[in-house]
Amino acid sequence: MALWSLAGCASEANSKGLDALRATLSGTLLLPTDPSFAEQNQPANDEFASITPIAIALCASPQDVAACVNWCRNEGIQPVIRGGGHSYAGFSTTQGLLIKTTPMNSVRVDEANQTVTIGAGALNKELLAHVVNTNFMVPIGTCLEVGFTGLVLGGGLGDNSRWAGVTADHLVSTDVVLANGQSVTANATQEADLFWAARGGAGGNFGVHTSHVVSLVEIPRRQIGAFELKFHGIQDCVSSFMAFDKIMHSAPDRLSGFLAITNLNRPANGTRGANKYPVATFCGSYIGPVDELRDLLRPLQHSGKAFHTEIVAQEFWQAQIDWLSVPKLPVHGLAETAHFTNQPLPAKVVDQLIRRVAAAPGGSPDAYCEVRLMCWTGGKVNTVAPDATAYVHRSSTGLLRPAIWWQPTSSPGLQREMQGWFSDTLRFITPFCQPSAFQNWPYRGLPDALTQYYGSNLPRLTQVKKAYDPNNLFHYEQSIPVASA
Image 1 (cartoon, rainbow, N blue to C red):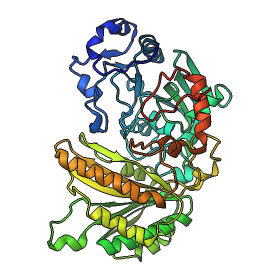
Image 2: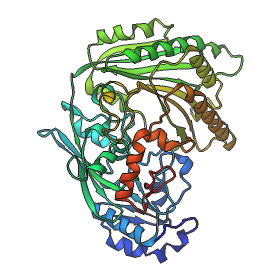
Image 3: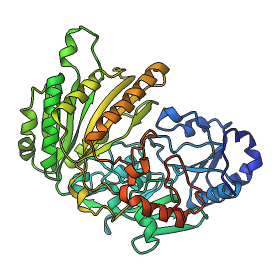
Image 4: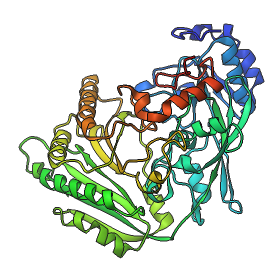
């Protein structure tokens, strides 16, 4: 049966047998009239909050997931999967059936075998709670509220990736409900093509993942170095950006970090604070002695006059908690994406980029713009062949990421102005980056997005799609297509 265009079909929900579907679930099926529906439908990106599914299935088991998949296939309804709901481009929203795996959030650590089994609905914070203060960890991202499943399927980068690798490189096996309703386990020896695709092919393409086994990484040392430096003013922001960029292109794998330039707290025209604007912030860690960290950062310290300098020794887990313990943000809209880099940006480009941020619209905590250089790749990430997994980005040293954030109370005019700044800034940085983009941070405005996300691995991914979802049941705007005959 062909999949329908679902605009306006919510009124036909009863005719689609939702009552029958509810009766098969051990979890909960919510309709738009249910009191908790709006809260359960709220994605991380408020821009897509108005997209309303005909129902939300809170799946408590793989059997629930299979029942939902079978129902969607039989009824011609689009199934869309959501774990943490942090698809920047809103690809975990739908007018069809929203399959939420959040009730399946178990985490079981097996230190003897150095693995952890993670339910599809578990968030980063739930994984962290089970490994904190042990001698083992899993390299995850930097947001506690992000779902682990979306993180690992898209690759997964964070502050520990340079020495520990991307999250996907530690996937041992994954359980998947396929488009035909069958549950399979994919690993190196069974369903090997699906296992290859699961490590970087992104979620929502081949089936619904219900559980993962991931190898634990032994922490190299418990005492590490951590740093935060801040500079202000155009000149010092430019010189410190260039110094840090150069450091990270030759840094040892154990050094990681990022820099952020933001237009937050922009002073009024003509005020005395203009010479202290914008602000460049540098944060990160070094898996080694703090004295070695100070030596590595000396060119950054000498690049300008920092108004804040903190280079300290920290216990490993305390550093992770500090890194991840960002207050949960209120409901907000956003746009973010990142291109990979493999050489320092030219001085003229850095100067123009920082001036672009300084002049950006917004500038308050309610609506602001920024650019980040995320030095989380290179190192061990690049020791894996590009075609060994679906995660193809194995020749970079950083990610250059423009971003905008706004509260729902921001005026529509300001939101449009910020989105224009974002797309224009993305066009500005593109010639100075590699022709690739990070699939964990999707953006609907990317030209030829699939090639940017998957590169030379895209043809094989379309073949895997053809083998496991030949009728394209799982689809969205930037989903992997079925290979043509």
